[in-house]
Length: 193
Image (cartoon, rainbow, N blue to C red; front, side):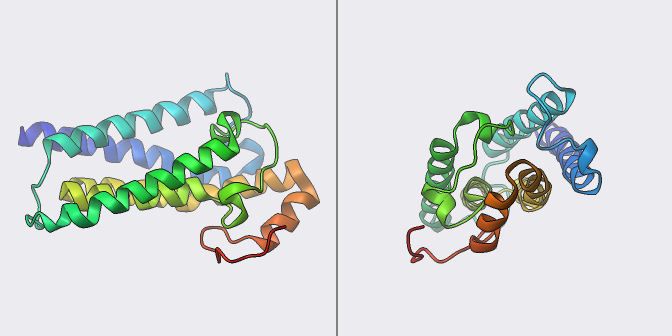
């Protein structure tokens, strides 16, 4: 089982590096971006989502097969990790339900600045990051800490590529929103806009 975990881990890391390279490429060469994809049937769309689904599958396998293999053997980790995971998942769900599936998958649909987007420009990335930290605490796997850390890095870089695209797509409406709403963290006591 240990050799299988190593294979899954290295495959996971390799796919995560593809996602990282795609995000950095999209920032450096926005006219030839990979993310957000130019259209649904494009190779960029297919590559990105195949990589994400593969990473999520490989991480799920590591949760099961590498469970409790690291340093925090105390069950208290469950009392911390599970609520953190739930909070992150709820934020992701709220973001997806507000943004809609087309926008969530990186396809052009419409500009959204309501729901959690009133407080942060990237509630799904923020929620995913919180959720993956919670899962890492819960599963107690060094492999997951590494893969989830790389995935969180993708989520920290991807908004920079999206911002270039949104500025071109939505112009002043997005620039005003960008100037008034934090990329990740914002006060939840802002006045309604």
